Length: 144
Image 1 (tube, rainbow, N blue to C red):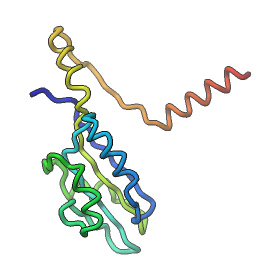
Image 2: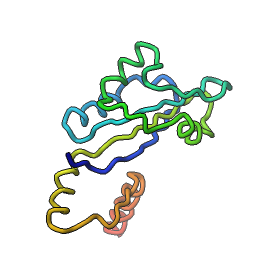
Image 3: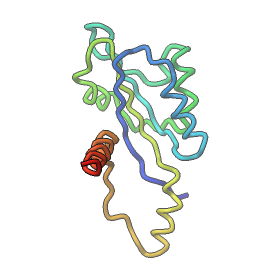
């Protein structure tokens, strides 16, 4: 079986009361076969308490029910140390979610590249905010 690229994404939430809209969208792309969620850790800071790192299995039932269905292969790639390092400056009453997922949609393309004798030389993710800024600057230049 071939694999697509695997990515770590860290999501910050300015509140610990996130309801599930993000999870619904993640579930939608999982259901579409675009990604496979491999691992998830949550780091939560309530008030001035220290950051608490939670595996999905440790979450209270209502929260667990929102996260558990999207994990298809709890691979244990993330560690508590990872979550603590990536949430070191977490503000009170906020949280981060660490997701490791595979881009399944890329696997057939990677296979075709390899079959043609090619290889991926470099990949780089350009953040959404950078693209939005470039598009806005381009629009302003066209208007001038």
